Image (spheres, one colour):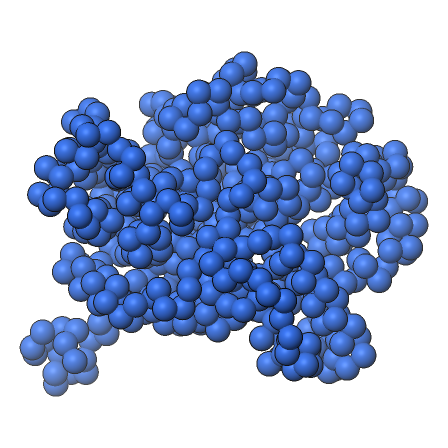
Length: 518
């Protein structure tokens, strides 16, 4: 579907400033929305919002349905009566410019445990009723997820609690075993449900605040889910696993721009034929949930629906593998029949074939254009703005790229020369040169990572594909959201027709003067 001409910013909530060691859904998030509104932005793009697992990557979550409890704002818990003020009077000395996940996880988990105990002792009748209603409405995924998390913690000494190392009756989900353990671990199960209740209460309030100000939130759905997740444990028949619960084939991509050995993600692959037998019901529920959380969805690795790279699970890299046909148009047709119009952005980067493009275009999904990929090569590149179509989303870079400043400094002389000649500038303000290029383009949507708005170097890089450890940590400080930056972005947005239309005046003044002036 076509989106209105608009502009926006890419930043994950973990990157917001604050005193709790990680960005959250509190005051800084609301002030960021105010910043977007003042700058005439109508898009806020985030990364996946699920509870992070191995490597702290939002693309390897313990659930495709749950939210990340680390994003819950302690300050709002105090404001809403879930914590006494004294609980946040003293905060550990945590870094302000990056997320040190180990100490943050320990601190936030203990704080959330206090909130649960406080709720049990002093929760109001209204809060109790809201929690019970949440649990009832979300039971389809919440019951499995909460038990999964409680079981992981209980079996943490066994290979980190990975589900296929649990007792066989739990691995195979024998009903009697599930009932027994749900009772044994009831307190922990309910606590995990309570964390989810808090997350959704805070996130949906923030989303409403953004929507009321004309800002749509673009979410992110990884095509594959993590092996160590409630999704795979609770739906093992939908994945290629052996009798011991081990993946037989895993996901990834062959050697490419980012890695000469490819990327071996390790996610188990879907049994698409099994999913097709009930009209992809699990996927329909997944997308229903994500469209509850956000307004538009970017599907990461869209090309996997047309064909995906199948890697034998015993291969250490992604070099050896094969392309296997995916569900193709039948999947999106089923989703459209179940969910209606699909506001989807197709992440169509990497090895893209005419068949992938045909699938994207058949359903009218906008693809992605990355300006950092445009220079130094083929002058007919689809990433050069003079070759854009309207129905696309242009980015200076993404969470997987270097920052624009870092990329330019590391680019070859030929690339740098091409950039300077293309934008008719000297390269001294290259991040904003590319922002201008994006906003001036014919692309319906332009999105800029916050790091580029701040003209930061690679010290602010969010992720490096194929490398684990030490990523997803960047945060900005409050004084980095400057008035000058806001003015530049607001001016550029208005200049290139990406500002939202002002409401029409009443009858006697309509059509008089310049619309939008104050």
